[in-house]
Image 1 (cartoon, protein in one colour):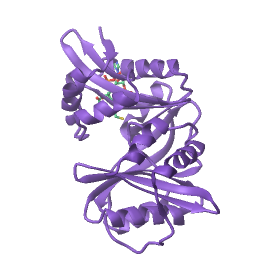
Image 2 (cartoon, helix red, strand yellow; image 1 turned 45 degrees about the vertical axis):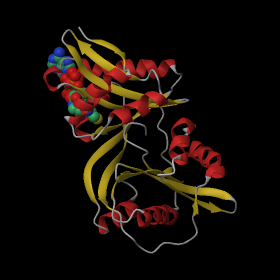
Image 3 (cartoon, protein in one colour; image 1 turned 90 degrees about the vertical axis):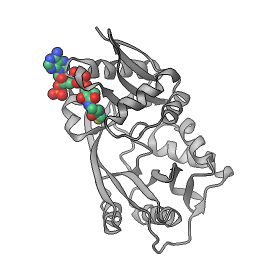
Length: 279
Ligand SMILES: CC(C)(COP(=O)(O)OP(=O)(O)OC[C@H]1O[C@@H](n2cnc3c(N)ncnc32)[C@H](O)[C@@H]1OP(=O)(O)O)[C@@H](O)C(=O)NCCC(=O)NCCS
């Protein structure tokens, strides 16, 4: 009764229209980026009457990420959403992915558990206006020659190379990227993607126990972005980061649960998500 096929540029208008129902703020350009990253990894679900749902994936070697799952309101609770998730898992498996991650609204945890995912940890999506505060001037702005080193560092933390995602982000002159180097070794980096007048902060990756480095990375970037609206998805357990942001008038927009099908990844690092749909 349902059919699933790969998303193509002709579907982008539908993808924007359906995700607007959840106010996810996605544009045709965002779906274009997903297809650029994973040409056969985004899907459209149809029934006899037309398009009724979408989902996206991206694979990074043995780790894949699932996101943007939505089904038309009048066609829910008939198995459509589950069939999109299963189709996406099958696709990621065909790319040799061993662990599939996702961020779920906390009320959707049981839905994903039925499909085999396990709860890993809670994340909070914080929004606020970037502010200026005191920073330690010991960070390096990421330049072209640093990009490969950052990608290698990220890979050692994340568990797989996110080169195809990080290269365009780190090379975009509109974005802000800083790294912390100690004894010749990177011990943390952070990026803010700046577009359409707002900024999404992430990824941030930092050695566990170096909250001071993570906070300095965040403060440095927020100082540069002063006055702009910024959002970020931070691990709830990072109290020092969450408290610092809340004390500076950032507030929680909503919460999500990081869930994995397969061995969990990224748990041993201070982690701000790149995005909800790509990890
Ligand atoms: C999440 C979402 C995609 C699920 O889509 P769906 O098509 O309703 O998914 P399914 O029908 O496969 O499963 C939904 C529920 O209906 C139940 N169900 C499935 N077939 C059923 C049937 N024939 N009769 C009764 N119930 C059924 C499932 O067991 C499931 O129950 P649960 O929510 O208690 O786990 C949909 O609710 C949605 O678009 N929500 C808004 C966007 C969103 O929240 N996306 C997820 C972000 S994390």
